[in-house]
Length: 264
Length: 325
Image: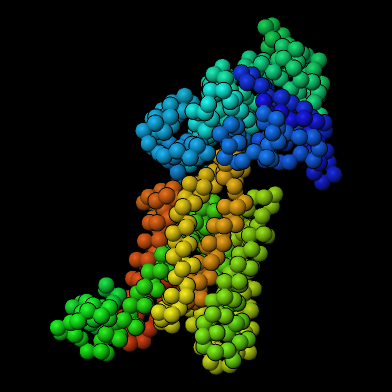
């Protein structure tokens, strides 16, 4: 289990996180929702082992993340960044192949097949030989997703792998947003665990098992998606009128009223 | 081989072969005269070896540095390593004229090494914010370091005696004429060591192209990688400056040329850049020796004359695009 326990983070006298605890369990898709500046990305950094918490601890299978050897950790958890920094013209399949780095394996037939599978599974079949910078923003985001999927493939069946994603759907068109979330769902159903920062509560209600709402560095509430995603909780979270309507769809109250008045 | 034949005195290839063989002790039926043998073994051969070594080292260091900073315009010359090394070497020449030649031969490269390390550390430290190296800041910091070093060298030039003056101007323009077998033997372990060690970091450098946090997520110890690669580069470049003075743009030209053909993957890039740099350098040396023969054009002037317009062309071609180097 990958977890943060009573984590506090301070930066320049501001509290970015205050007494935050979160647990990622195998076969669970965990969505993290919150307004801008709530501390979502900071919490992701804590769970990725990028940052030492000032208070509390972050641990994988009971061992502090800072005590894990970097390459062993890299075989258990992968991180999909929000922005990509790759400006050099690596081939797309070479980008995905970088995901295999922590496995220290000889490049060969099996590796190439895995890379191809990962590219196919994000809808980039046939793009393998393209130069990465020539891809569109959405295609790049999917190539990065293929890279982190490749990174977590082929471990022992018994040890859970953890995929942390910072706004995985941000650059994608509507169809690819759902394709991406379905792919994450598949990863979870095969035994992995996902933590995804999302901005659309509807995506969380469709795909997530667990939801944590975070606001100004504190957890507002956390639990099963259906229990957490209520009109009251979401309206408090975003300081705006949000309503859960038919079949769990979440719509801003303002949007309903505007639409109604325009239809009259 | 061409580098051995052509020079202010042209020699036929056959003589060269004979000289080389007789120099390693083979009895030759038609041994060339001792003058020819000396020209080849003591003058031209070390030059050619030096050109290959320095060209390979500068080009590969440039390639590795561009990967490290994720910027194709990073060059040991642009981020202050070389000018820092030259300033320190000049300071050593001026401050320690009384030293015996052998002591100077050690003190000068040693201070060049320390100077290069310092300048690189300053530039890299300034450019690092929140653990990420800002490229524009780095280049500006390198620019400032270069200006500072130029001021220091200018000051040293104005207080130096004529003998030191000549020595310093040798550093400023770069030349392969000074080094002999002793100097090569002293620096070869470091330079060749770096040439062999750097390609072993190819995969980690590839991962670093994704970004520092991303490389760490892939299990790369980024801080250690940056420190050790930078150290290897500074070590090699400081040796090159100590041997031959400032020779610019090789570290920019060769890697860029190779990257256009083989792509940015370091596995192929680093050795190929070394090869291209070696070829480029020995060609430049050939031109520098023959263009104004019997006089010699400082090789640093030649590489700058070719490299600077090329650099501008690169900037021109890429000025509109954020990506796609």
